[in-house]
Length: 185
Ligand SMILES: Cc1cc2nc3c(=O)[nH]c(=O)nc-3n(C[C@H](O)[C@H](O)[C@H](O)COP(=O)(O)O)c2cc1C
Image (cartoon, rainbow, N blue to C red):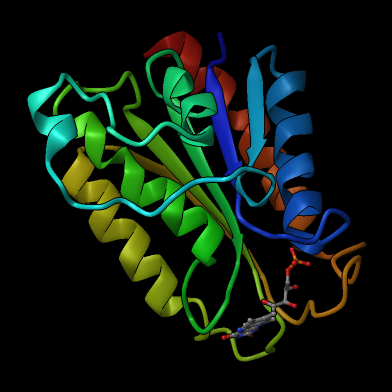
């Protein structure tokens, strides 16, 4: 099983989010780490129903769907990476569906202890991801996960616009830097 779980949130297969996530993955793999990338937009994940069944059944959700492809990695990986475009100042609905279903892990603690945020957006105003970053910080803080880094790429609208953006090198370097986190702690 993997050291790092990357969840991407964009529906665009050749989009900027996946390119940023790939740069991060390249760096982490070069550091000898095992990375599992899952594209939430390619899965059928139903919204959490808030029924509480998982809390009474050791983290098993009453709904049977593609969330089953993500859950095992929450019990083997140490770091989770949220990679998303900014959609209306937030993560995409596709990624949020998976996040809400992680509510089940309150009943059975996951192996995740750390997290990373990768985000892309069209605007050149660098305050645009602030609400997303605040949301990431509060939900990961609540989960007790250590923030290992945030990389954002502004001014990327069309798929592929991120080519040559400095954020790619930053994401690659962040991936590579995890070697010390995994091997020294
Ligand atoms: C529904 C929707 C909402 C968006 N909302 C924002 C936004 O609030 N701020 C922004 O700067 N860009 C916004 N964008 C632009 C995307 O963040 C941008 O095109 C990004 O590069 C898409 O990433 P992708 O190529 O990985 O799909 C939005 C795009 C869509 C389709």
